[in-house]
Figure: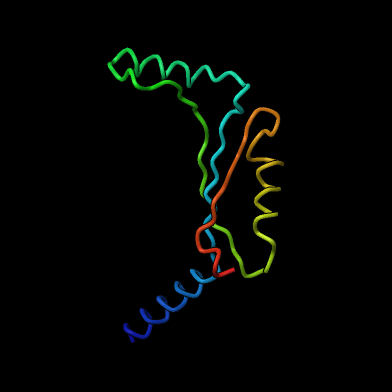
Length: 104
């Protein structure tokens, strides 16, 4: 009985993995936008001996686990998520990568 339960759990877990895609989203300030936090980090790195650092940009990183069973156009949906909520298109740029997209 224990093995049957464990096998069932593993099968359900693997099935859920087949219908899942991970979106990794990177958001940074646009080049023309001042980044005081990045400038402070660059100065601090230089102060402690890391003179090779010329510029630092402080941004955001997100991972979204997405269900693919509904057959939606994931790149379009991610673009909408980024432009409507996750990033401020006026001052930030974003890019993303998908893991497991071959299963969509």
